[in-house]
Image (cartoon, rainbow, N blue to C red; front, side):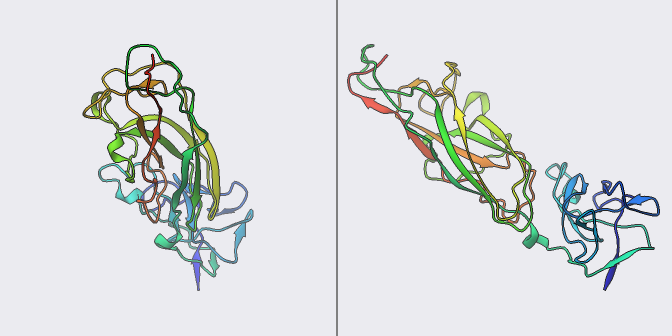
Length: 275
C-alpha cells in the first residue's frame, strides 16, 4: 500500500499551512516531514516507514498534528484534531506507519514535587504575640516531569500555584486563568518554560519562590490574610502545587494527570512569639 506524499502546497485539515523541506521538492513544493515540520502544531505521528527526507519520514495524509491555538477557544476543535493532507498526485511512498490516534500522543506526568531543603525557621522573640509562625528565606521546590507517551511533548509552561491549605492532599487542575478574584486563592506565583521532552524522557529541576519582601494586600482564603511570598505570617501552613502545561499547548492522551496532590509547607512554631 502507498500514499501520496504531503507537501507545502497543501494545508492540514485545520486550514494551517504545512511546512516542508527547503531542499527536496515535488512540483515545486517542499516535501513535508514527520517530527520536524508543522502545521502550527508539530506533525508528529505517522509518516512513511521506508521513505525519508533529510533523515525524517516523509509525511503522508492522515498524520497527526499536535493540538495548537486556537484549539481551546470556542469553535477551535479542528485545531485540536488536525491531520495532514496532500494536493499533489505524482509521487507516493509505501509502508505508511499510519496515525496512532490517542495511543501516539504525548502524556506528561509530574512524578515528584517537594521542598528542596528546609526553609522554615523562627528566631525572633519580641512583639508580644503568643502564637507566631515565620517563613524566612527562599522556598525552593524540586520537581521531576516525565513524558510517558509515544510522541514528543513541548515546549510548554509550568506554573507554581499557592492555594488554600484546605486543598492539601488533593490534586487540582490549574491552567492559566484559574487565578482567584481580587487577590484570592489560587495565586500563580512563578512559572517557567519547559522545552521538548522526548517519548520516555524525564527532566528534573528546581523552582524558587523568593522572599523579596513584597506583601500582597487583600489575600484571603476565607478566614485569614496571607502573603504571596515567603516572608512572615500568623499561620503555620502554606499550600503549593505545580501544574504542567499551563497554557494547554500539549495535546495529551490523558489531560488529568498534570499535577500531584497539593502539599503544605509548614513554618516552625516558636512559643515566645516573633516580630
